[in-house]
Image (cartoon, rainbow, N blue to C red; front, side, top):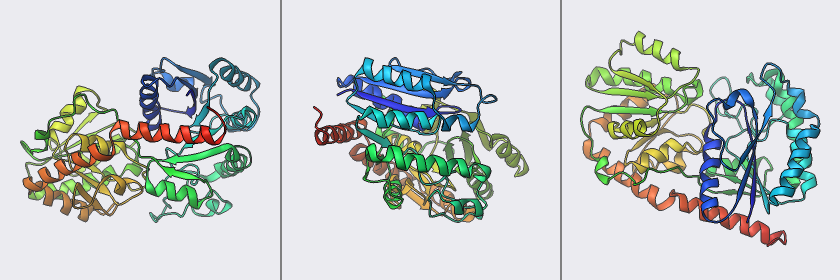
Length: 408
């Protein structure tokens, strides 16, 4: 079968782009040609290398672009999408992010008559800011409704735009979506709750190291190291780990914290580390990949995923599990799909500094527990989250939809 993927993004490529790259390569290697059509701001492509079969439709610069442009027809985009269908002859369209120029994309999807599958990579279909967290820290039930204006959420003046967008989606695109896919149980349930059905869970996967690291990596070595690997945004909750680590350090001076990643909250975290007098005990290596990432996982005794806002399915948890490392994660969103409390790691209340400090101090003092959790995580990864698990599930979805639509 032939799959046309449509995606958009502004800013640095993230988890959705990594997923599209990986699944496209896997499907292509299995004899299923891909065409990826990406709508993006050209300024965001400086560090982005398109796939061999990817076409980027550029938006204007951020300074020149206005939201209303998403809500009106773009004849050039419509014409190009029609040409792509004629040239590539796809059997199915897989829709990923849906923001930039959503009106002409909606019209194209309606007129194409091809079956559509959509993956929810985040919570934006049912939360305008995708965090499902109110300003007071309480969880939100979701739903893009006028009441969002009165919750204090940062959606602010963009609410009218989001309301128009979701109405447009529900009226035009939704009837043509044969299935909504989500990697976690929680996101699948929320899709169904808010009317995006039918929805099906299909756990995602990572680009795993080749070969997988030896099981001996589960054996803790050297000074105890706590790891964080994420984008450094406030809602990722890294501040919780930093504050908790300050408490750990007082009882375990040899402990170290490595915070790997980049983002707008990086400088604030560095300043806070200085205020807590953690110089020399906290490292900020920036964004890591390749050999640097492998060295990071060799060093860490436990990985932390401390998100304080909704997490769909953090892939870094799978990266740790594949490398025999236990995970301490927030009891939040899709994290419990990955981390089995008391078996492959521990689930903790978001933003509870004392709970995180106690958990970190406890596991770092129990090498046998760290090893057991690491090996259990690796076994769980191999049983449920290898790339072929996702590939086979996705091919099954496509085949079922094409049979149901009468396509071969």
